Image (tube, rainbow, N blue to C red):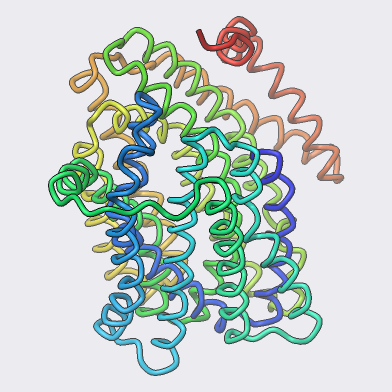
Amino acid sequence: MVLLNLLVKPIWLVLENNVQNQMGHAAFGTFAALFSFTFIFTSFTDLGIYHYFTKQMAAVPTFMATHLPVVLPFKTLISFLFPFVMLLAGWGIGYRAEQLYYLTLIGFIFTFTQFTQFLRGALQAHQFFNLDSIISVLERFFLIFIIIVLLYLGITLENYVYARLTSVLLAFGVLCLFFRKKFGSFPAKWDWQQLSFILKASLPFAIINLVNGINEKIDMVMLERLASSREAGIYAGAYRWVDAVMMYLWTVLPIFFAKFAAHQKQPLEQQKLLHFGQAIVSVPIIFVSVFVFFYGEKLFWQFSNSSPAELSLMRLNLRILFANVCVHGFFAIYANILTASNRELAVSKLVALSIVVNVTLNFIFIPVYGSLAAAVNTLFSAVLVSGGYLLYLRPKLNIPVPGKLILKLLLSAGALSGIFYGLLLICAIWWVNTILAGLAFLGILIVTRVIRLADLRANLLQREK
C-alpha cells in the first residue's frame, strides 16, 4: 500500500499544481474552500464507526464480520443524507446558487469516498491486503487519467468537480463488484440494541474527527469567506505541500496507533514504542521542514501564470505552514498514544481549545492580513495543543515525557539548519546542498543516538510473536 501511494501521490501533486495554474487562484480557491467545508463535517457520514472498528479489530480480528451486517444499513442511510446536510449548511453560511451546486456534488464525493474506506475495512479484516492496496489508490488512478485529458482540453472549476466525482464513483463501483464476488450479497440486518452500543462506543471518535476536521480545514473556509477566493487559492497552493508531507504522518501513525492500542495495559511497552515512534515520525519531517525554509521556492516551479507578488506570498505561507508541520512531526504521536489508550475525550478537549483560539484569531486578523494570518494562527494553535499533549502524558498514562529525546531532536534540527545555511554560502546548487545536508543530518542522528540500530532491529525486523 505504501509503495502504491508513493507512486500515485507525486504524480497527483504535480497534476494538481497544473490544475491550479490553469484554473487560476480564485477559481481553485473556491473549490478548496468548498472541499474544506465538506471535509469538516465528514464525521457525519460515519459517526466514528470506521475508527472504532479499526481499534477493535486490533484486539479482536472477527469484530468487523460480527458487526458489519448491523452497521451497513445505518451507514448507507446517513451517507446518502450527507450531501443534503451540506447543502443546508452551505446555505446557512452564505453560499448561493452555483456554489451550493458544487457543494452538493462535493458532498457526494465525500459520501462515496467514506463508504469506500469503510468497505475496505472489511477487506482488511478478512486479510485481503493486496486487494485493499489496489482499491486504496484506484480512485486516484482514475482521476489522474481524467485530469490529464482535461488539462489538454481546458480545465474549469465545473469539469474539475465532475472529474473528482466520476473517479470516486468508478472506484466505488469496482470495490462493490469485488466485495460481492468475495462475500456475496451485502450483509444487512437491523438490531437496534447492537447498533446503539456501537454508536455509543464510536461517539468519541466522531467527536475527534469533527474537531480535527475543523482544526485542519477551517482556515480555508474562513479565508474564502472573510478575505477572498484568491487568498484561499494562494493558501491552497502552499498547503498542498503540507498535505503531501503530512501523508507520511497519516501513513506511519496508524501503525503505532494499533501497537499502542494492543499494549494499553503495558505502560512500559508503550513507553518503548513512544521513544521509537518519536524518532521515526519526527526525523523525516524535520529534514523536509528545514529544506522548505531554505529552498521552498523550488516547489512552485509550475505556477507560470502567477505574478511575482503571488509567488512571494505563497513562499512565505509555505515557510510558516511548514513550521506547523514540524510541530506536528514532534508531537502528533502524543495525540496518537492518548487516543489509542482511551483518552479520546481529553484529546478532543485540547483540539477544541486550539480551535477556539484559531477561529478567534482568524476573525480578528484574516480580514487585514489574509492568508498570512491564517498560517500564523494555525502555527500558534498547533503549539498550544501540542503543549497540552505533553502535559497529559504522565497524569493520563503514567508515561514520562521523553524530554531528553525531544531535546536531541531539537538540537539536531538546529544543527541541520546551520548546515544548510553554511552550504548556501559556499554552493549555489540546491540539490547538491540538500544531499550533503541529508548525509550530515544522518551522521548527527547516529552520533546523538536518536537513531539506534538496536531499536530498528527490535521494531522493524523482528516478527510479532
